[in-house]
Length: 200
Image (cartoon, rainbow, N blue to C red):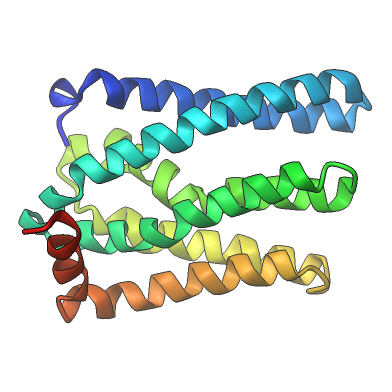
């Protein structure tokens, strides 16, 4: 984790990530203000940005995956969770676009896409900005970030009286990936899977 060693693609990924979050927040504000036409135009723009985000995320993940085996186990825990939450993000993102005719489900799916990307995305930013400069252990962000994400999903479930299966799916996958991350790393399943995927 040294910013001077990051590639141009890493910086591009960071810009795209920030732009996507900015678009999501802007669309929520526009929907609240009943500016539906501009909301729709920004929606199509955010789909393009999200596609770039998925592409750059996949590149960053795949090019840094092997290096996790040489680092502390906490890095492997983070990458194990990413294996579940990044596809879940794509699932909710696509579901949100497919549910455009149903405002409640559209809003819910888009909100869930933002929530499940918190640990892979915002967690790294928090570590890079607040922990890394002070040589603080990466674990100081992993468990708190995962528990915060689970707390948000539980709150959302109770608020909506658990009537939406999307919230249950998000909570189940997030909790399952978090709980199984310790097993996968401590038993060597993650390391074996990485070596198999990389053909080494």
